[in-house]
Image (tube, rainbow, N blue to C red; front, side):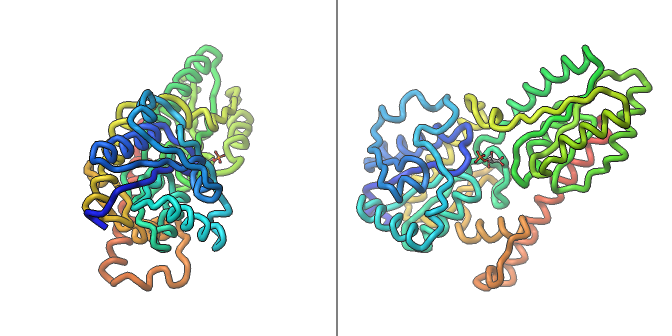
Length: 353
Ligand code: F6P
Protein backbone atom coordinates (compact mmCIF):
# COMPACT_ATOMS: atom_id res chain seq x y z
CA UNK A 1 0.00 0.00 0.00
CA UNK A 2 2.87 2.38 0.86
CA UNK A 3 3.26 4.25 -2.41
CA UNK A 4 -0.27 3.65 -3.66
CA UNK A 5 -2.03 5.60 -0.96
CA UNK A 6 -4.30 8.25 -2.42
CA UNK A 7 -7.25 8.70 -0.19
CA UNK A 8 -7.85 8.39 3.54
CA UNK A 9 -10.79 8.80 5.89
CA UNK A 10 -11.08 10.08 9.43
CA UNK A 11 -13.80 9.70 12.04
CA UNK A 12 -14.36 10.43 15.72
CA UNK A 13 -16.35 7.98 17.81
CA UNK A 14 -17.53 7.32 21.37
CA UNK A 15 -17.58 10.05 24.01
CA UNK A 16 -16.27 13.27 22.52
CA UNK A 17 -13.14 14.81 23.99
CA UNK A 18 -11.61 18.28 23.74
CA UNK A 19 -8.84 18.06 21.17
CA UNK A 20 -10.66 15.71 18.79
CA UNK A 21 -11.11 18.63 16.39
CA UNK A 22 -7.42 19.49 16.51
CA UNK A 23 -6.65 15.84 15.85
CA UNK A 24 -8.99 15.42 12.88
CA UNK A 25 -7.68 18.71 11.52
CA UNK A 26 -4.09 17.47 11.79
CA UNK A 27 -5.01 14.25 9.98
CA UNK A 28 -6.69 16.22 7.20
CA UNK A 29 -4.06 18.93 6.87
CA UNK A 30 -1.11 16.49 6.92
CA UNK A 31 -2.77 14.28 4.33
CA UNK A 32 -3.68 17.24 2.11
CA UNK A 33 -0.12 18.56 2.38
CA UNK A 34 1.11 15.19 1.08
CA UNK A 35 -1.28 15.35 -1.87
CA UNK A 36 -3.86 12.87 -0.55
CA UNK A 37 -7.61 13.14 -0.74
CA UNK A 38 -9.38 13.21 2.62
CA UNK A 39 -12.92 12.37 3.62
CA UNK A 40 -14.61 12.39 7.00
CA UNK A 41 -17.36 10.05 8.18
CA UNK A 42 -19.97 11.77 10.33
CA UNK A 43 -21.20 10.47 13.66
CA UNK A 44 -18.48 7.89 14.30
CA UNK A 45 -19.01 4.36 12.99
CA UNK A 46 -22.66 5.22 12.29
CA UNK A 47 -21.32 7.33 9.45
CA UNK A 48 -19.93 4.19 7.84
CA UNK A 49 -23.19 2.32 8.28
CA UNK A 50 -25.39 5.15 7.11
CA UNK A 51 -23.03 6.40 4.42
CA UNK A 52 -22.62 9.89 5.87
CA UNK A 53 -19.49 11.23 4.29
CA UNK A 54 -18.00 14.70 3.79
CA UNK A 55 -15.01 15.64 1.68
CA UNK A 56 -12.43 17.54 3.67
CA UNK A 57 -10.44 20.33 2.09
CA UNK A 58 -8.08 22.78 3.78
CA UNK A 59 -10.80 25.23 4.78
CA UNK A 60 -13.19 22.56 6.03
CA UNK A 61 -10.93 22.16 9.04
CA UNK A 62 -10.33 25.86 9.62
CA UNK A 63 -11.21 27.48 12.95
CA UNK A 64 -11.54 24.23 14.84
CA UNK A 65 -8.09 23.69 16.39
CA UNK A 66 -9.27 25.60 19.46
CA UNK A 67 -12.79 24.20 19.72
CA UNK A 68 -14.19 21.48 21.98
CA UNK A 69 -16.56 18.77 20.78
CA UNK A 70 -16.06 17.24 17.37
CA UNK A 71 -17.13 18.78 14.07
CA UNK A 72 -17.31 15.23 12.67
CA UNK A 73 -19.87 14.42 15.39
CA UNK A 74 -19.80 11.27 17.43
CA UNK A 75 -21.89 8.30 18.44
CA UNK A 76 -21.75 4.99 20.25
CA UNK A 77 -22.85 2.70 17.44
CA UNK A 78 -24.18 -0.67 18.64
CA UNK A 79 -24.99 -1.94 15.13
CA UNK A 80 -21.35 -1.64 14.17
CA UNK A 81 -20.61 -4.52 16.55
CA UNK A 82 -22.84 -6.93 14.62
CA UNK A 83 -21.58 -8.96 11.62
CA UNK A 84 -24.12 -7.15 9.40
CA UNK A 85 -22.93 -3.77 10.67
CA UNK A 86 -19.30 -4.66 10.06
CA UNK A 87 -20.13 -5.86 6.54
CA UNK A 88 -21.84 -2.52 5.82
CA UNK A 89 -18.89 -0.59 7.23
CA UNK A 90 -16.39 -2.53 5.12
CA UNK A 91 -18.56 -2.05 2.03
CA UNK A 92 -18.70 1.69 2.70
CA UNK A 93 -14.89 1.92 2.99
CA UNK A 94 -14.62 0.05 -0.30
CA UNK A 95 -17.25 2.22 -1.97
CA UNK A 96 -15.19 5.34 -1.29
CA UNK A 97 -11.96 3.56 -2.23
CA UNK A 98 -10.15 4.68 0.86
CA UNK A 99 -6.64 3.37 1.42
CA UNK A 100 -6.88 3.76 5.15
CA UNK A 101 -8.99 5.16 7.96
CA UNK A 102 -8.00 7.04 11.10
CA UNK A 103 -10.36 6.39 14.03
CA UNK A 104 -10.13 8.81 16.96
CA UNK A 105 -11.72 7.80 20.26
CA UNK A 106 -11.58 5.75 23.44
CA UNK A 107 -11.55 2.02 24.12
CA UNK A 108 -14.81 1.30 22.27
CA UNK A 109 -13.55 3.19 19.23
CA UNK A 110 -10.23 1.38 19.28
CA UNK A 111 -12.03 -1.95 19.58
CA UNK A 112 -14.04 -0.96 16.49
CA UNK A 113 -10.87 0.04 14.68
CA UNK A 114 -9.32 -3.31 15.60
CA UNK A 115 -12.34 -5.12 14.13
CA UNK A 116 -12.15 -3.03 10.97
CA UNK A 117 -8.45 -3.76 10.57
CA UNK A 118 -9.13 -7.48 11.08
CA UNK A 119 -11.67 -7.22 8.24
CA UNK A 120 -9.01 -5.92 5.86
CA UNK A 121 -9.42 -2.15 6.20
CA UNK A 122 -6.05 -0.50 6.91
CA UNK A 123 -6.60 1.38 10.13
CA UNK A 124 -4.83 3.70 12.55
CA UNK A 125 -6.36 4.34 15.97
CA UNK A 126 -5.75 7.54 17.92
CA UNK A 127 -6.52 7.72 21.63
CA UNK A 128 -9.19 10.35 22.28
CA UNK A 129 -11.01 10.21 25.61
CA UNK A 130 -11.20 12.39 28.68
CA UNK A 131 -10.78 9.25 30.82
CA UNK A 132 -7.09 8.46 30.14
CA UNK A 133 -8.03 4.81 30.23
CA UNK A 134 -6.21 3.29 27.27
CA UNK A 135 -3.71 0.94 28.85
CA UNK A 136 -1.21 1.03 25.99
CA UNK A 137 -0.92 4.83 26.20
CA UNK A 138 0.24 7.15 28.95
CA UNK A 139 -2.16 9.76 27.63
CA UNK A 140 -5.47 10.20 25.83
CA UNK A 141 -6.52 13.40 24.05
CA UNK A 142 -8.91 15.43 26.20
CA UNK A 143 -7.64 14.29 29.60
CA UNK A 144 -5.76 17.49 30.38
CA UNK A 145 -8.65 19.75 29.40
CA UNK A 146 -11.12 17.69 31.43
CA UNK A 147 -8.87 17.83 34.49
CA UNK A 148 -8.43 21.58 34.14
CA UNK A 149 -12.19 22.00 33.92
CA UNK A 150 -12.67 19.89 37.04
CA UNK A 151 -10.03 21.95 38.87
CA UNK A 152 -11.79 25.15 37.97
CA UNK A 153 -15.13 23.81 39.20
CA UNK A 154 -13.67 22.47 42.44
CA UNK A 155 -11.84 25.73 43.15
CA UNK A 156 -15.22 27.46 42.89
CA UNK A 157 -16.84 24.93 45.18
CA UNK A 158 -14.04 25.37 47.68
CA UNK A 159 -14.67 29.14 47.83
CA UNK A 160 -18.26 28.63 48.84
CA UNK A 161 -17.40 25.70 51.16
CA UNK A 162 -14.99 27.96 53.02
CA UNK A 163 -17.60 30.71 53.42
CA UNK A 164 -20.22 28.31 54.78
CA UNK A 165 -17.99 25.77 56.56
CA UNK A 166 -19.13 22.93 54.31
CA UNK A 167 -17.88 19.82 52.64
CA UNK A 168 -18.46 19.10 48.97
CA UNK A 169 -18.33 15.62 47.53
CA UNK A 170 -17.62 16.01 43.83
CA UNK A 171 -18.28 13.18 41.42
CA UNK A 172 -16.34 13.34 38.18
CA UNK A 173 -16.47 11.31 35.00
CA UNK A 174 -14.17 8.44 34.26
CA UNK A 175 -16.38 5.41 33.63
CA UNK A 176 -14.31 2.64 35.29
CA UNK A 177 -11.17 4.71 35.60
CA UNK A 178 -10.32 6.94 38.56
CA UNK A 179 -7.57 8.99 36.90
CA UNK A 180 -9.55 12.24 36.69
CA UNK A 181 -10.80 11.99 40.29
CA UNK A 182 -7.35 11.06 41.57
CA UNK A 183 -5.28 13.69 39.82
CA UNK A 184 -7.75 16.53 40.33
CA UNK A 185 -8.17 15.44 43.94
CA UNK A 186 -4.46 15.93 44.49
CA UNK A 187 -4.34 19.16 42.49
CA UNK A 188 -7.35 20.63 44.32
CA UNK A 189 -6.30 19.59 47.81
CA UNK A 190 -9.05 17.03 48.37
CA UNK A 191 -9.24 15.61 51.88
CA UNK A 192 -10.10 12.21 50.38
CA UNK A 193 -10.38 10.57 46.97
CA UNK A 194 -12.53 7.54 46.13
CA UNK A 195 -11.74 5.65 42.92
CA UNK A 196 -12.44 2.13 41.67
CA UNK A 197 -8.77 1.09 41.49
CA UNK A 198 -7.90 1.44 45.19
CA UNK A 199 -9.99 0.39 48.23
CA UNK A 200 -11.46 3.47 49.89
CA UNK A 201 -11.03 3.82 53.65
CA UNK A 202 -14.28 5.58 54.43
CA UNK A 203 -13.78 5.52 58.20
CA UNK A 204 -10.34 7.11 57.87
CA UNK A 205 -11.71 9.84 55.58
CA UNK A 206 -14.48 10.66 58.04
CA UNK A 207 -12.04 10.63 60.97
CA UNK A 208 -9.75 12.99 59.08
CA UNK A 209 -12.56 15.46 58.41
CA UNK A 210 -13.54 15.38 62.08
CA UNK A 211 -9.96 15.93 63.22
CA UNK A 212 -9.34 18.77 60.77
CA UNK A 213 -12.65 20.39 61.70
CA UNK A 214 -11.61 20.25 65.36
CA UNK A 215 -8.43 22.11 64.37
CA UNK A 216 -10.53 24.83 62.71
CA UNK A 217 -10.58 23.79 59.05
CA UNK A 218 -13.76 25.01 57.36
CA UNK A 219 -13.76 23.63 53.82
CA UNK A 220 -13.53 20.02 52.70
CA UNK A 221 -13.41 18.60 49.21
CA UNK A 222 -13.79 14.90 48.42
CA UNK A 223 -13.49 13.67 44.83
CA UNK A 224 -15.26 10.49 43.77
CA UNK A 225 -15.06 8.75 40.43
CA UNK A 226 -18.34 7.95 38.69
CA UNK A 227 -17.02 4.39 38.38
CA UNK A 228 -18.21 3.87 41.96
CA UNK A 229 -21.85 4.27 40.95
CA UNK A 230 -24.03 6.14 43.43
CA UNK A 231 -21.39 5.95 46.14
CA UNK A 232 -20.62 9.69 46.06
CA UNK A 233 -24.17 10.61 47.05
CA UNK A 234 -24.20 8.09 49.90
CA UNK A 235 -20.81 9.26 51.08
CA UNK A 236 -21.98 12.88 51.24
CA UNK A 237 -24.86 11.83 53.52
CA UNK A 238 -22.56 9.77 55.74
CA UNK A 239 -20.01 12.57 56.07
CA UNK A 240 -22.72 14.98 57.12
CA UNK A 241 -24.25 12.54 59.59
CA UNK A 242 -20.96 11.56 61.20
CA UNK A 243 -19.00 14.82 61.18
CA UNK A 244 -21.81 17.34 61.47
CA UNK A 245 -20.19 19.25 58.63
CA UNK A 246 -22.92 20.25 56.19
CA UNK A 247 -22.10 18.29 53.06
CA UNK A 248 -23.23 18.91 49.49
CA UNK A 249 -22.95 16.55 46.55
CA UNK A 250 -22.07 17.75 43.04
CA UNK A 251 -22.01 15.63 39.90
CA UNK A 252 -20.00 17.46 37.25
CA UNK A 253 -20.98 14.97 34.53
CA UNK A 254 -20.75 16.10 30.89
CA UNK A 255 -19.68 19.66 31.68
CA UNK A 256 -16.22 18.15 31.98
CA UNK A 257 -16.30 16.86 28.39
CA UNK A 258 -16.84 20.25 26.78
CA UNK A 259 -14.78 23.37 26.41
CA UNK A 260 -11.80 24.55 24.45
CA UNK A 261 -8.85 22.16 24.54
CA UNK A 262 -5.77 23.13 26.52
CA UNK A 263 -2.41 23.57 24.85
CA UNK A 264 -1.45 20.04 25.94
CA UNK A 265 -4.46 18.57 24.19
CA UNK A 266 -4.13 20.67 21.03
CA UNK A 267 -0.47 19.80 20.70
CA UNK A 268 -0.76 16.08 21.44
CA UNK A 269 -3.79 15.84 19.17
CA UNK A 270 -1.96 17.62 16.37
CA UNK A 271 1.12 15.44 16.72
CA UNK A 272 -0.92 12.25 16.90
CA UNK A 273 -2.96 13.20 13.83
CA UNK A 274 0.16 14.01 11.82
CA UNK A 275 1.85 10.80 12.94
CA UNK A 276 -1.11 8.71 11.85
CA UNK A 277 -0.81 10.01 8.31
CA UNK A 278 2.98 9.62 8.22
CA UNK A 279 2.59 6.00 9.32
CA UNK A 280 0.06 5.35 6.57
CA UNK A 281 2.37 6.88 4.00
CA UNK A 282 5.10 4.51 5.19
CA UNK A 283 2.67 1.65 4.59
CA UNK A 284 2.27 1.00 8.31
CA UNK A 285 -1.30 0.42 9.47
CA UNK A 286 -3.34 -1.57 11.97
CA UNK A 287 -1.66 0.43 14.67
CA UNK A 288 -2.58 2.74 17.51
CA UNK A 289 -0.49 5.83 18.10
CA UNK A 290 0.25 5.91 21.81
CA UNK A 291 2.26 8.12 24.11
CA UNK A 292 5.01 6.42 26.12
CA UNK A 293 7.45 8.38 28.24
CA UNK A 294 6.57 11.62 26.41
CA UNK A 295 7.12 10.11 22.96
CA UNK A 296 4.55 9.10 20.37
CA UNK A 297 5.05 5.54 19.23
CA UNK A 298 3.06 3.05 17.16
CA UNK A 299 1.61 0.02 18.89
CA UNK A 300 -0.02 -2.96 17.15
CA UNK A 301 -3.78 -2.42 17.30
CA UNK A 302 -4.61 -5.98 18.41
CA UNK A 303 -1.91 -5.90 21.06
CA UNK A 304 -3.24 -2.60 22.36
CA UNK A 305 -6.75 -4.03 22.50
CA UNK A 306 -5.73 -7.18 24.36
CA UNK A 307 -3.50 -5.42 26.89
CA UNK A 308 -6.42 -3.08 27.57
CA UNK A 309 -8.69 -6.05 28.23
CA UNK A 310 -6.03 -7.57 30.45
CA UNK A 311 -5.76 -4.41 32.56
CA UNK A 312 -9.54 -4.07 32.81
CA UNK A 313 -9.98 -7.74 33.77
CA UNK A 314 -11.95 -8.43 30.58
CA UNK A 315 -9.76 -11.06 28.90
CA UNK A 316 -11.73 -13.75 27.07
CA UNK A 317 -10.70 -17.36 26.46
CA UNK A 318 -8.15 -17.49 23.67
CA UNK A 319 -7.31 -13.76 23.72
CA UNK A 320 -3.69 -14.48 24.58
CA UNK A 321 -3.27 -17.42 22.17
CA UNK A 322 -1.68 -15.40 19.34
CA UNK A 323 0.97 -13.97 21.65
CA UNK A 324 4.37 -15.32 22.66
CA UNK A 325 5.36 -15.76 26.30
CA UNK A 326 7.55 -12.69 25.91
CA UNK A 327 4.68 -10.57 24.59
CA UNK A 328 2.38 -11.72 27.37
CA UNK A 329 5.06 -10.87 29.90
CA UNK A 330 5.37 -7.36 28.40
CA UNK A 331 1.58 -6.94 28.61
CA UNK A 332 1.63 -7.95 32.27
CA UNK A 333 4.48 -5.56 32.91
CA UNK A 334 2.55 -2.68 31.36
CA UNK A 335 -0.55 -3.51 33.42
CA UNK A 336 1.55 -3.66 36.60
CA UNK A 337 3.10 -0.31 35.74
CA UNK A 338 -0.32 1.36 35.24
CA UNK A 339 -1.55 -0.04 38.54
CA UNK A 340 1.61 1.00 40.39
CA UNK A 341 1.35 4.56 39.00
CA UNK A 342 -2.19 4.91 40.31
CA UNK A 343 -1.17 3.52 43.69
CA UNK A 344 1.84 5.84 43.83
CA UNK A 345 -0.34 8.89 43.23
CA UNK A 346 -3.04 7.63 45.57
CA UNK A 347 -0.49 7.36 48.37
CA UNK A 348 0.03 11.12 48.12
CA UNK A 349 -3.59 12.01 48.86
CA UNK A 350 -3.60 11.31 52.55
CA UNK A 351 -0.29 13.00 53.33
CA UNK A 352 -1.21 16.12 51.38
CA UNK A 353 -4.73 16.46 52.74
O1 F6P B 1 -15.61 7.75 28.01
C1 F6P B 1 -15.84 9.09 28.25
C2 F6P B 1 -17.02 9.27 29.16
O2 F6P B 1 -17.24 10.65 29.35
C3 F6P B 1 -16.94 8.55 30.50
O3 F6P B 1 -16.18 9.28 31.44
C4 F6P B 1 -18.39 8.44 30.87
O4 F6P B 1 -18.61 7.36 31.72
C5 F6P B 1 -19.06 8.23 29.55
O5 F6P B 1 -18.18 8.74 28.56
C6 F6P B 1 -20.41 8.88 29.41
O6 F6P B 1 -20.93 8.53 28.19
P1 F6P B 1 -22.20 9.24 27.52
O7 F6P B 1 -21.76 10.57 27.01
O8 F6P B 1 -22.57 8.32 26.42
O9 F6P B 1 -23.21 9.39 28.60
